[in-house]
Image 1 (cartoon, rainbow, N blue to C red):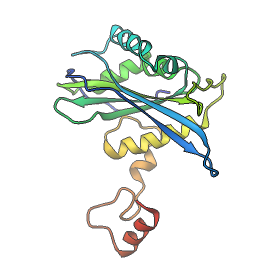
Image 2: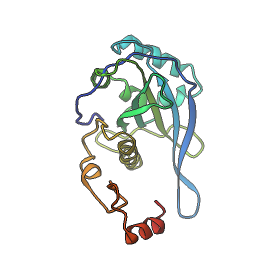
Image 3: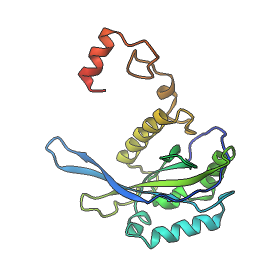
Image 4: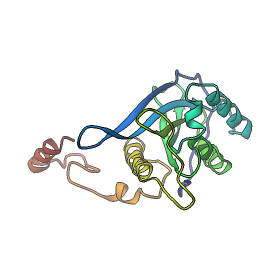
Length: 212
């Protein structure tokens, strides 16, 4: 779903790195996998200026012809839009979204989100726009069912929250506003939004205790 956001950047595309895939597993207490999300990407939008509908069509065709086409065209899930600056080693995340009642690729590439992505690119002069997809699957790798009208998917909502927190940590200028207020404003000495030099003995001991 599209969340509130701020204004940002402009860009140009660069060489496309190799795409990869992986997966995220959530285990039950007994050790069995009860929730699973694949990871596909990055998929680059081949453009040196504004992202247009034909760029999305090309991306969808690329996905449809890939091994993950069947999953991304039917499964709900989460997605992350980012930009890989020219010469950088990684994609910088700029927006996290979710799709519960329609396939994740359809939600991530609708006209409303294209407008958002282009606003992010407004201050980029040299970079490659990219999308990562995290579709929800069964333990055997099949797409899970979409949520019914008015329904939701708790695992997808949880993963979106976690992704927002992770992306905000690596990019404080993340465009998501919804669900980020506490992540931006909460402070725990030496642990959450730490400040330079504020780690005391107790906070250091507690960090070791919880493994962060």
